Image (tube, rainbow, N blue to C red; front, side, top):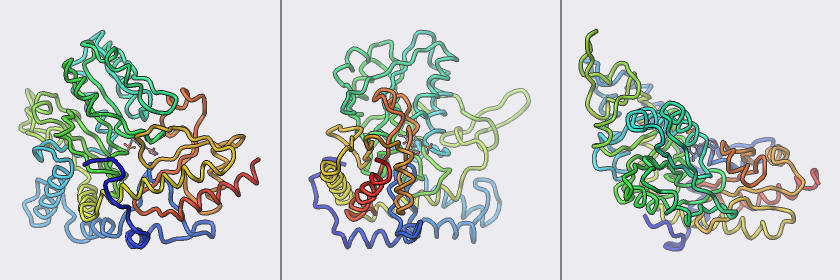
Length: 417
Ligand code: 7TS
């Protein structure tokens, strides 16, 4: 999907309010004020259809998958595998076998580090990440470096929050065996040029994982046109349940990698002498999976498929434009992350105020934001700050929510400054 913002008209306020009405958690007061939920980067709220899918599954079909000789198990298995196909189509993966269920983005990245990484890396090989990664795309690679003697290298971030792409040719050398890069930064909102990075990495024979945790909720990602080797995301940031996520991997790669965890489901035959492993995708899915979670995530994707995602993206850009306009007017606000390619993440500091205090004062007014380092300490260090206040917007946020945020900040300033 074309992610340039101006392709389509944004949604009308009535459209947004109709959408918002489908999310029960948004229809409440917090601290005596209507909830303004601006913490979508942490997790999105769930539409009623997703909640109903979970209740329906547990009320009627609850059973273990792929093993029961009975009707409920058949029903659960069919829904679980249908969910996999829905995710496959959502990412435009070539086959359902390329979709591995995980607990989330974190587990998906750890899976690749522990399997492909341990199998393929040796002393002196390089792994490349960006300076704006979430800890879940740093620490698994550091652990792998300790185990293999590989070296972690970093693509620097410019002061405006953009990736320093001028450094790519000197960094992507034939020492680099793996590149793991965030599609959209959760702390800055920066959209990274992942297609370019993938192309350059492939030219030196490296494999690439894209951390899509903050991307898939904003536009349709096509893993084949990106030519990503691996793509990871979490269901809960995509209007689905917590505890379910996805690792996409190219079939040929997944077939050559060793399994991740051992246990039931991932085996073909077990004896004390030798165990053989199941075919894809089950080879990577040891143990009873999060069946309800997979069904809930598929319901969330079908919900999204029923919406005009271009119009939603244009709407999210309109919210960010309003933020920029109001940020200019309020004194002493410093935006952290001004990349020209940016998703609907508004990270900032108020001069002289600690982010945690700003967050508390906003919460007292019913406005939910996240404060702190956002699990991205290295990029905070680069900006020389301990953290930010982050408002992250989603399809159900209105321009009124942005106005409420800035009115809330004006009030907070009266207490703090
Ligand atoms: N990668 C990115 C870019 C993220 O934003 C997050 C979560 C993760 C990975 C990890 O996802 P998980 O579902 O496995 O935990 N980011 C955030 C955030 O910004 N606020 O809370 C969680």
